[in-house]
Image 1 (tube, rainbow, N blue to C red):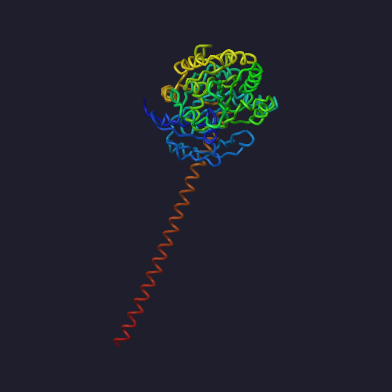
Image 2: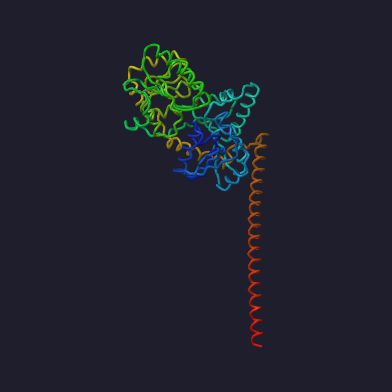
Length: 462
């Protein structure tokens, strides 16, 4: 496989933590390690430190809106970014978000002369509906999103369900299923590591431990979990539930736990960035609860599987793709009654849960190395097709706008280079002139002293 320079764009990147940001980090690390050179382009975040990555991270201007929506809002028209990518000799653009990052990528495509791939990770219609209340504005936002997706040379989705969601929004083009991997190794951690990670929590041995990992948003099925736990306790079943993560609905979720009087058995561990510590929680849990129909891939389901922890999922959801009930996971209907019934049946069968978890480890686990290997093989086909003129030209009105925007950014970057060069030349001329003047002054001073000395000698001799 040839070495190539791949530009990865996304609206989120550490220190902002979410599943897509994690995917971009792992794409970049594996490309840099095995397949060539990666360049990450992402909005600027106050306090971000990118010095520890083995690949360059190019930040473009943004507005800090984290208190409002948890993310920064990138301004996707950056001449400096165009200049940097031209210097990096980028061969392929791969955006992981159909919003600001896709707009920037569309503007850069003509400038760097590279094909554009987009991966659709998230059901954006749900996020849009949550952020925008006006139906008219929602429809406009979705149309703009689909237009961005349709403008790409190739579209990837992380699951069949993600592709169906994209179709439901109005996308009519082709897509390729390209699953994400996990960056946790296969296998459980040591008992000592588990004890260290879970210290300070009331987790009695022999009492089932249930786990959720992800953004604390209601649309991830958290209401189903809480109502099921309330019903489970009413049946006299002892258990412990741990929520790992943070998010916009965290305050409401915590308040609901208090209102349902579950505080003595439900704990919030916050967002955990340390992957080994997170792995210890997966290893300690008996079941991973993920009754979400929002997620398109359910990366956390594969993370749990890596540590031999079986998941309880909604039948027919994207997260449940590849899962067979009772074989490598457990399937329920999308309601609290179904989840409570499943937990009631399983809580006293620890060995059965462990056996299904081991099957999940063998059958559902996909490493990032394997996932990116497949993606890089596809990159080769995309580049070959692009170089042979196999992709249609982008000549719609919106394409013309973005191409013009790219040309403008390129021109601005050239002007910036010229301005910097002119300023540098001016500084050098000024410095050279100053040095020449100083040398002249010194020369005149020495000459004057020498003349005065010679005059004194002449007077003395006469």
